[in-house]
Length: 87
Image 1 (cartoon, rainbow, N blue to C red):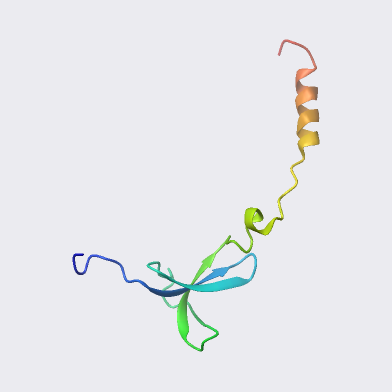
Image 2 (tube, rainbow, N blue to C red):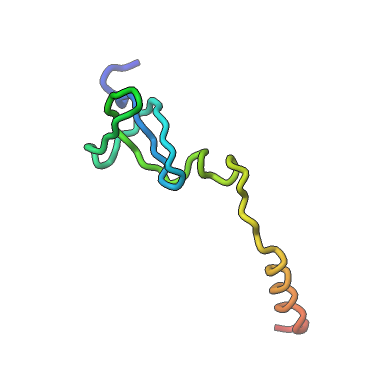
């Protein structure tokens, strides 16, 4: 590896805004504000990166899938195309 070309790799806290869930991991990402930090459970202070969706709030991982109104879509389709052949 060439020296001084790789980004710094260190501990970062990712905080899920939707679920109120945080996890500590290592990353090359840095906080955009630069000064945003959080005190973690171990007493150390780490930079924090806020994310909108993580495995704690994503419907695929939580099993809380959104119900799609397929009946409404089918009815709209039928109303639109049952008027006649020409448009």
